[in-house]
Length: 271
Figure 1 (cartoon, rainbow, N blue to C red):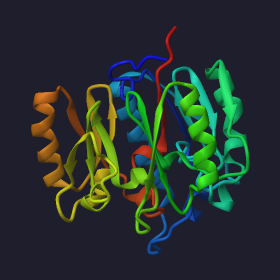
Figure 2 (figure 1 turned 180 degrees about the vertical axis):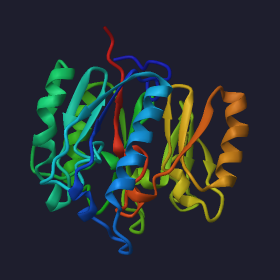
Figure 3 (figure 1 turned 90 degrees about the vertical axis):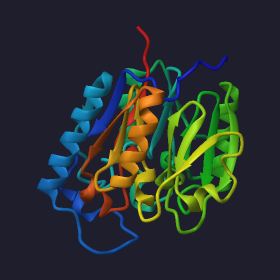
């Protein structure tokens, strides 16, 4: 497989899942306030609209009351080049999510590959560039899960880079996001590990580390609302690189350790 320029952020299809009322019981390491369901619904709808405005079709799956975190569809699967891989989330309460999303993926993708073995890995720990995959080991992704996904990705032409995610970071992509084929936006803590060697890195301003969980979708970069320094920084960068910056309110998702990237699967399906 040859690398296609900008394949890592040129999408025409998105999969999301309507939040269930049980989302108020989603996993949270931080503690504090629980999400308000009505606000979560509103913010999720705005997120879906932003994806559509960025260019592409949004497929919305029905809510799964049995799985409070099922709205975060990025964790039980990854998608690339007309292929979907169902993963194995590391949180016990999420153990059935991959099986639940597989039928919908089978309709969209000619090939759906279940993760072999017994290792755990969540999509929040996987970042794809045009020809490389970063996989972060974390509390949710172990070495066996890394090894299983690495084999699949390498078979499809990706170089795989293993990252030791700092213990204070839940998922690898909690603290980083792709801006373009050669540039990542990252918290200083994650960038200091040296994991992005060979790429350009823009660091989040001090105090705005949570803005690092951003999403590039075609010519739009979606960022979390409430980070004015990051907004100004990326607006200036985007003027030269050809993208606009859109802010979204994700405060309810943040209450259960989530953000922009985890609420969708983003991919390209060619007719």
